[in-house]
Length: 548
Image (spheres, one colour):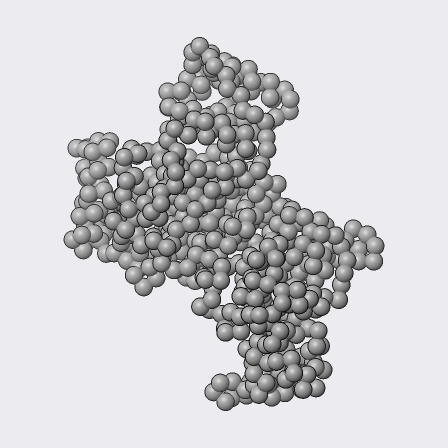
């Protein structure tokens, strides 16, 4: 079964009847190695072919669908068709064959700029590495009707059209595939590799790209730097991530994903998609540093005018100030008590109608496992009921700040309508299989089977995406001072091997550890930069130093 992006269930409502039938046939009659995209913008010009088909050996196809009946077409020439609309008016439109041809040629021109996607030698040197073709689908005109109209055959060659009786539910898969392959005039090149397919996707769908800045702990380029090279690691969203991102419709959605499964990438795409529709978006998370990173990501995508990113308690403070409501006195209340009173003030103001609900076209919660149930209940009320767009990203195995007992709640109890709208991402792309295996040895005691009730936040056991790397070393020291001395020695050895200081990081559990390490590193004469406090807007900038 072919992979359709976006999923059929998410895009069927905006398809014509003929497009729905074709989508069903393509999904059912083509094998698993076929990729299909329906009405997805292509390239920097955001072209909109009806269907794009990509196959490792057959190549790239564009299909334009016209739900015309025979009597709809009043005149035709190679460039234009005159059709009669449902209201009885006559209208001149571009030839669907010309549309399909122009789309595929524009795609070829874009892809041929990449030296890795062209023929290196021979007759087709410099041309696209795979075959390409285009055609027209007429789901309401039979082959006999098409053949009876000589004028049609003169402007659309017979082998470049699929007719109504050639795409029935009972059509033989082999015959249906041959109908598509017959559209191609070319038979050259070798079978596309997975890397080449990802490279094609990277060029055709720039919104699926994952920049080096998103992957790096220490970004080396400013946010406004134009990305011209394909990153080496996780260059684009994988197909499951892309299909999920493009298939998210309106309503409440919950994505349960293990660490490193691409949840935040999907959130970023969703923000971009909604911002293009001019919806105001609120993105909330618990961690201050994560909020800063997300703001940087939104700025990189040029979304700051419509997308607001805040950590939860910063948003609470801001919304009280915005509506001129009193905040707790920080001189009277400290620490956790201040936070509790801040939360209570916002909840009370919303219940009293002093803070309006439904303020945002969409609300998204990243790392929702760090949110208390009452926070989620508050956030759910901020969604405009007309759009009702709420996305919660969740992984209870990463619950860093709360007690495990606190996770026993249902989404329904906090106003999140998640039943039938949950997705689970199990593949970890961030870590090598060796790192993931070691981490799991530490975490397996708290890992439990997935909850059978999709309305209860589950614990999801991660699977490796297949990346390989060296086996991590565990070194047991007699004291923390000895640990730091060992780190200093190893860092110096790595630097002597040619690894830059700014590609080394030291991670610690508690602030006092960072302070001690910082002092010892400086005393050892090592260049080091970093922060020992989880303060807002702390940004790591690349310097020739070790970061701690």
